[in-house]
Length: 420
Image (tube, rainbow, N blue to C red):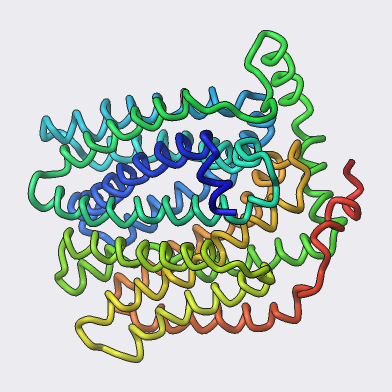
């Protein structure tokens, strides 16, 4: 099976572009979070920035899912990468270089880049099936994609921490912009095996028609969830775990600041999480086992939440590094198996709309907990917040072994949904 993947020309260009742009995004993320702390000195700023990103993903994702299904996904990804590259050059790089960057300009960048991120994620998700000849390769492709993406994420934060501490914020943003341009160049060479719709006059008319029928399309997506027991339960599980586990993903800069690790230490924590995720993804790729996808998803979430309990139970100086590595290793369960469940279960022509609706439901309540958690952490309650979030996450996931039907036939999802 790995030999078949090596012969896929599309995947080579796709993975290279994704890998390089991921390194740049990792560098930019370190710069963004660290400069936000430097400009305000408040932990709630991180919660606010992350919340804004989540809200935009949830709301705007409903519209972009509908739009993406009517556009040529290859051309769309090329153009959005070019836009993001120019955006980084205009706001964070230029104003940082001139020494004029402030929190207001940073907010403009965060909002615009978040709007660009939503359709990018959905288009990447929706284009993958068109890049392989055999759908049986999807699990391996998703695993390799996750592994390469996380290897890039390992290098990005580590390099970003060094760049920020040694060369400054402006240099970090410049590198990010260049990687977006490189990614756009790689995407130009993709040749999908089947049409992903084309941008033409007729195509634009179809998109306008689709937007006008927005309510019907969203209703179609939600009916897929409501009429199918498994997807309905999975959506409920996603809603609860996103609310509980969301703050755990933004702790790295806070822990680095509290422990005196600095920007370089922050980058290392992020990199160790990505190393753990990469190793987990690589194991899935190499082991020829037909995993129970739902079970692996739940085990991964339990392990991820349980890792952060170690910070409460063990106060050793090296524990943050161990915790973030373990958290990344278990996080692969949600990334690989969660994505594959949807790609196998939802009709390809509805993937964009479905992911927009699913993301909306899953992300809607997360900002509330993000703000509350960072507020209490700012009051010196880091251990208490970790204990509560980790314990509840573990309890919910353990209960879900019974709540979600382990033996559900994934092929039946489409048949039972009422969607042809």
